[in-house]
Length: 424
Image 1: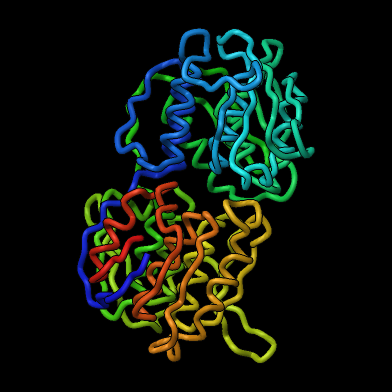
Image 2: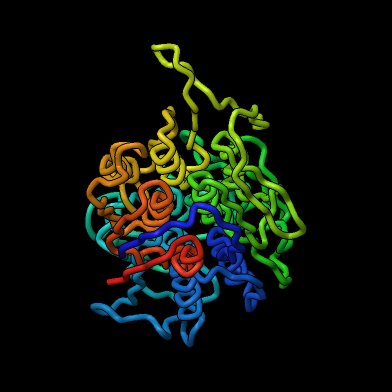
């Protein structure tokens, strides 16, 4: 995709996609609760549609309607959707009222290199029957629905590699859960707890321990807030503009989504956020004002230069956005908390380093050869690179349609900021 003619002075209204994280959790809760989901603003992302389709198939006659048969087993292909794979693994492993069946849980080539061993270990401890069909610790898996397995006891799970292991288990409502290993992405676990409470679960977290009192999910309506991670690309576009302004629909600054921190982080790049009803309005302002963030945001290097500092341990999906923004503005920054990024849809640290090396600086890339960016089949890399056209003038992005994984209408919305798309 060729993108040219960025409008650096814009005032637009952006219809964000519903939060993929919240949507997927709400769908799992409806599945465990045994009721049809009543969810407003459900994410239109490929991942959420994939999860919804697979859950509908599992609810079919004898629990297998709609699933592909493979060598006598029922195959579920999760493509490159890590959340879908991990959430379904717990559901398939437990007695949820379905007859016992063998399932092959698999995905794309990239999925076969994304770790799942710590979740498998936790499930095996409570009686789940799971076998590796390839490399130990990674998909594909052979899963036998086990009527002897039950989450109504205390279990532990190591979340060093992914907080999704804990969310997958919590949604099935164990008695209590202990979080082992290095804590990462805790806001996602707290989001899971918050949504479970909405549906009637009696649950709270105290440090590494999550406690659930006997309770059942209630069939209530749920409205999904817009996705704060997807909002970050509009923050980037405003930061790279001359005088940009965007109204982000159905978004709240006091959101329980962890990536809402992007509003505070972007104050340092000259982007101001205001709550206006159910929308957040962001605009370009002069930099230099002290950030109102309550986290340390600067760092002095060996040369006593003051650098911006960002710790992504709890917000790994924001790394591509912040890295691209710093590159576009020519801002030096120190990044920490990157260890789990290699387990995402791509190795995002390596991928962004390679792609951002294609632009020397915002001062010299005007008039230089057109940068052609690769996306590594990673939606977040594609969306993080797109706003760079504000500073470069024209860019080309390979496999641009990968954005449908989380934000199908991204290019439709982004077209408000540019003059020309040349789609292959």
